[in-house]
Length: 394
Ligand SMILES: Nc1ncnc2c1ncn2[C@@H]1O[C@H](COP(=O)(O)OP(=O)(O)O)[C@@H](O)[C@H]1O
Ligand SMILES: CC(=O)OP(=O)(O)O
Ligand SMILES: [Mg+2]
Image 1 (cartoon, rainbow, N blue to C red):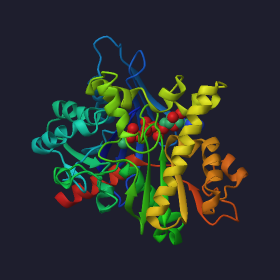
Image 2 (cartoon, rainbow, N blue to C red):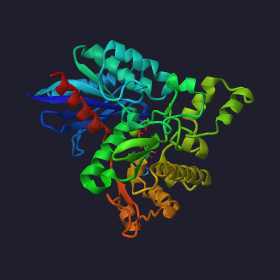
Image 3 (cartoon, rainbow, N blue to C red):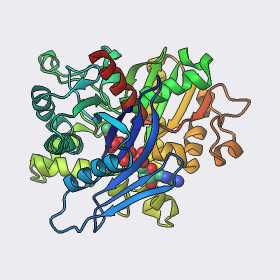
Image 4 (tube, rainbow, N blue to C red):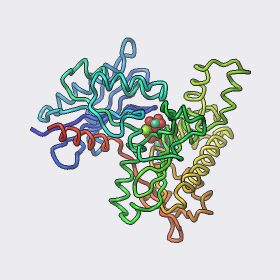
């Protein structure tokens, strides 16, 4: 009987999952799926690795919660993959705080520590932690493993990790942590596979999805990133503001009489592409819209991404390789193209035909910077971590 792990990737706009066979050195995907709680009837859809539909379940919204959907996933795995032994469930956990620089088995103590980090990722942490409770209630003996978005950035050091506030706050853990690390880790590994000469070069990875951040890599390790203590910092996102004059927050509280909770809601849920366009948080909708406000939101997204790529290049002392990933980075040639044009002064030249076709290498022959498009795979990174944790335990 082969061993398998179930991986849950709870993001801000979706819950993705994958079931992996871990009997060989490299995990192989058995099936993948999506849990959609936002529709009128929460839905679970499972597909084969090739994308064929395997299973779909709808729940009546009344009385249903995502716990029912997780029970459906476990039921499906038992039914269809009963010839595999489910060894663990691996979870993407957005915030690991100062303590976790690698994956860890979830115990009551670990869970309590992770729950305490909720104020540092209020949009994500509860959504990441909830399935751990639900699954423990259904299968109390099943090993659960937490894999952190912050872990990859533990290689980051001062001054990049430091905020310019009194030092005593740093001792209390107030510093730049960075996120999307499971994605950056996967992409860094792919760069080493597809273009080994680039693995040691000055590289910026742009993870542009519903959440968006950049990572500067030297020798494949994170040396700087745009997200900070929370996943609110840095680039313009679907509904998040990204970097904003801190004076704005004070003004909103002191003069607009908004509470701290109101400001938090504004910055996490009502800002970014949604707030600027007034139309949608979804890049596809904005690119298809003829409205001026949609174009202005996209223009700001592009300007901020470009500015921050230059910041990352400054940390690195130059730029040899730029990689696009995440839903927008992988699919939106209309976003990659103007970012490339604005970075011409750094030697970036994007080949229009290669970009339109979404090729793996989209830089032109005259480009001083290799520009790549690499689809991310956070689920595979988590499966690899789970396999390693289980092997260390054996
Ligand atoms: N073909 C496409 N063209 C433009 N944007 C796209 C395309 N496909 C997906 N996106 C955008 O990617 C974003 C979602 O990214 P994704 O990485 O899947 O999100 P999450 O952060 O939830 O993992 C959305 O803004 C969506 O509009
Ligand atoms: C950390 C983060 O922003 O994640 P997501 O892209 O899933 O929102
Ligand atoms: Mg994501």
